[in-house]
Amino acid sequence: MKNNKHRLIERKLRTVEKRLIDLITNMGYLKGRSHKASEITAHIYIHQEATQKILRKLTGYSLGTISTALQALEKQGVVNKHSDPDTHEYHYELDGTISQIGFRSLTDVQRYLSQMKEFFREIEAKLSHPHLSTKKGYENIRRFLDEMNTLIPAYERVMQRFQTFTSDFKPKREV
Amino acid sequence: MTSSKVSQDPHRFDPEIRQIEQEIVEFFAEKSPEFTGRHPIIATVLTYFDIRRSLTQQDLQDLTGFSAGTISKSVRQLVDMNLITKETIPGSHKHIYRMEKLPFTSARYFFRTEKLLEEMEKELKEMKDTLDTHAEEMKDIKGYQKIYTTITQLLELISTMPTFMALIDEEIGKFIKENK
Image 1 (cartoon, each protein chain N blue to C red):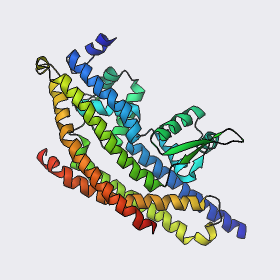
Image 2 (tube, rainbow over the protein chains, first blue to last red):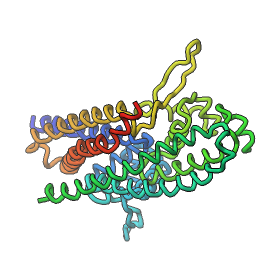
Image 3 (tube, chains in turn purple, orange):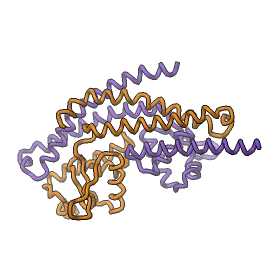
């Protein structure tokens, strides 16, 4: 009887875990990650640390798929890896709490915006040759640049103000 | 190789313009995965929509060189992300995909994002309630603490999003209204 109840409760927990994995996977997919990469990210979020073999067992994906997803997560600063001195296996660890990673990724957007600005300056220079203004497709590029030139400064202000908010927000929650 | 790509250009962009466009596409295909986690193929297809606005799956195949399957998957994901819409071309069974305006400037896009965040918050709260209700019986089961921590941290992160959306509304709202 007690065992039955325990099994029922365990099943309930596994159902919540499955829902959580699906929810995080969906979040990643809607951000533009591939479904597989999103699912691998979901498992890393929950387990906080894992090896490639563990992730293969959890997801059923190939080691190649897992390795590619982990490399991308490492590049984004979501995980960092360290080698186990005994097994020489790499362990991938979540780099901070989910909120910290989320806030950090928003800060990274500022770097992204600044690289965009620099890149668009080069594009503007190329597009400024007078002979191009009558060419087919010029208007499309021009409109895109005009929109981005308006949006980037606006987004920079959003990020600056949000960064101020999150730096106030974190200590309050940690007290 | 390049000339065949140019001759297949669905909108017949001038080769010099096409070259500039490809540089823009390559920039986002490289940078977007690094900074936003977006898949390079998604970033590539999305940038073509940013610039050209209306495209068929065949157009995208011609522009990118990706397979029909890859393009089909990509446009489905972009529709799911609410970045583009799908329409049937009258008198045919073909579809055209459109981006009305840049997603950052679209009120519809932000409305959907807000709604999505609300749904996620609701679902996370339900999960947390289940774990709280059965805390005594579940706390020693493997994984309980990690699942609980993940839910709590996601709720914390989502709780900051209304502020973020309000800032966007304030800073970019003027631009949205101007472009309606």
